[in-house]
Structures are given as structure tokens and as C-alpha cells.
Length: 418
Image 1 (tube, rainbow, N blue to C red):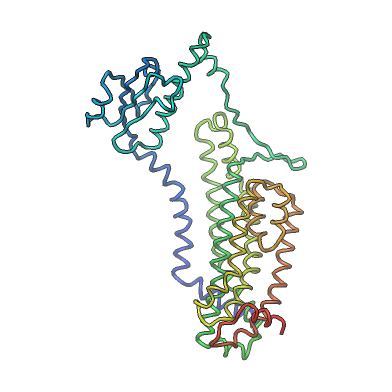
Image 2: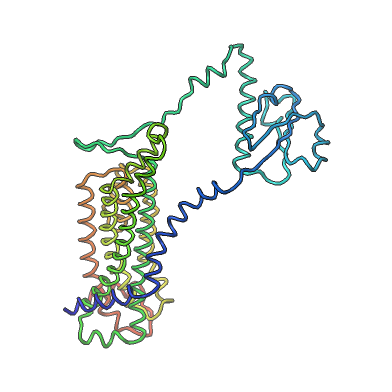
């Protein structure tokens, strides 16, 4: 009964705050806005019009340069000095006599101001293609450019993941994005809510509230109540976002898939849309993320609780909190390696070790992981949490009565042996 009261107090105190309501509603909107902003800016921004003057000493490269509506090439007989002195000319290219054999030395692009990345890339591609065409003419093969264009191919393939008798369309790019996104969310939530437990304990210890509370509640019960109460706040926020995500998956993605002949022209994009439009897939990833978050939060929040009980203020907690924050940071760094090679032996063990398993296993999940590995990782993580609660409760029991002195790490370890 006492545990329920503590959990309810910690939970209701935070979910009733305006800051919780505002962030819960605004963060999904902000994330959607950030995702849509680049595309919207590209649509609304007018393309840059650039007229490039070309002074070609070879007389063979300039005729092969073609514009695209945004970049136009105009051949000129003006000398380089005349082009430099004419301030109305914003960009010009000087092509030397040895440009075909030494283009890196004999081709120079001059601009007044900087060109956009798209314009610069287009000019480079046109110069490369023109020099290649001139070099190909030396082989005296008729229509060699047309032949090369016809045999050139871009193998954009459709990926199917086979698990037993089931076949699931997959997208490597989408798996990478999902792994990276879920990793960052876990990293953010574990640190934010873990440090929230530490801050709450420090504030109550500073106000001497804990001295009154522990007279009627066991220290271990108080610590567990705080951890679970604040954890429920995080779960509530994640569930609200999950409902919004599921609604977007069920209603928005099918409409994107129906727009145009996506499957025929962009199989990779079609595969990604099909996955995101499948509520079972979306809620499956979301469900595993929730389980790993709960396990990771419980594991690390016990450490943060022990640190909060050992110090009197936030400043003193800064150095000790690295004991909990450094492994989380190492986990997110290690997950980058896991994303690049999710099936490696290193990725397997990083997904089992409880210090890194929340982030590293979530980095593997979108690429396909056997069920027994996921369950083993969760079992080890939750078992480690039970041990960590037992260990940190011993530190918490001693630390909440310590005032006026910041303990060393060796002293905290000694407390755990009492």
C-alpha cells in the first residue's frame, strides 16, 4: 500500500504539470515539422538561375556542355582578362588547350560569390561528361556514348527477408533510419528520466523531507516507489506518441503508397512505405522499444537514485553521475557499429550486456533478430535491474542520512557492503 501511494504521488505530481502536457503534444508535431521542413523548403524555394560563360581554347568541350533550365552555358570569345573585368558576368569557365589530357590543371571555374551545391555539382558533372566524350572520340567507335548509355544500369533491387515460411519486404535504408531513431529516443529518455530520479531525491534530501518520510517507509520501498512513479510518467508519454505514430502509419502511409506509380519506379521507397503502412510491424518495433526502455530505465535509474542519495546538491552530483551517464553514452556509440554490422559477434554481445543492451539491441532489431536473442537480452537486462535495485538500495539507505560531505566513490562502494 505504501509503495502504491509513493508511485501515485510521483506520477501525478509530474503528469499534471503544464510542461508535461505541452511537451507531450508539441514534440510529435515538432518532429513532423522537422521532417517536412526540408521538402517544403525545396518546393517553395525558387531555383537559382546561373548563366556560365565558357572560354574554350580546345573548341571541343564547350559545345558538349548542356544546360538544365537552372544552369546555362554560353560560349564566348572574350579573353580571361575581359571576363574578369566584366562585373555582370557571375560565373565563367576557362578551358585551356590541354584540358582533355589534364582537366584537373587546365579547367578553372571562376565565380563572383559562391555557387549552390546543386549548381556546383551540375557544372562538375557536365565538364566530366564533356571531357569523357572527347576522349571517347579518339577510339573511333561510332555512337560510343549511346552504346554506353544503353548498357549502363542502376541495380535498384527489392529486398525480401525470409524468416521460416514468412517473407517480409524490407528496406535497408528504412531499417537504418528506424534503428538510429529508436536508439536516440532510448538514449534521451533513459538519461532525462534517470536524472529526474536523482534530482527529485536531492531536492527532498536538501529540504529534509526524506527524514520524515523514512520514519514510516523503508528506504528501499521509497527508492523503488520513486523509480516506478517517474518511470510511469515516461511510459505514459511514450504510449501517447505511440498512438500518434500508429495513426500516422495506418492512415498516412497508404495514401503515400497510392500516390503515383511508386512500386514500378521506386521499389526501395515502395518497400519502405509498405513496411510503415503495416501496423503490426510498427507496433512490433514500438513494443520492443518500450520493453527495452523500461528495462534500461529501471537499471540506470537505480544508479541515479543511489547517486542522488549520496550528495546534497546538483553540483556535487555532476561528477558522480558520470558513473551512470558514461555507459549510456558508450552504448549509443557502440550502437553505431552495430547498425553497420548487426549480425556480428560483437553486436550480439553488446545486445546482451545490460550496460549497452537497450541501445544496441534496438539497433539490431529493424534488421531482423532471432526471437530467442531478444528474449535473452530482456531476461538478462531485467535480472540485472533486480540486482542493481538490491545493491543501490543499500547505498540509498546509508546515503539519505549523510549531510555536509560529498562522499568519494570508494566510500559509496563501502556503503554497499553494510
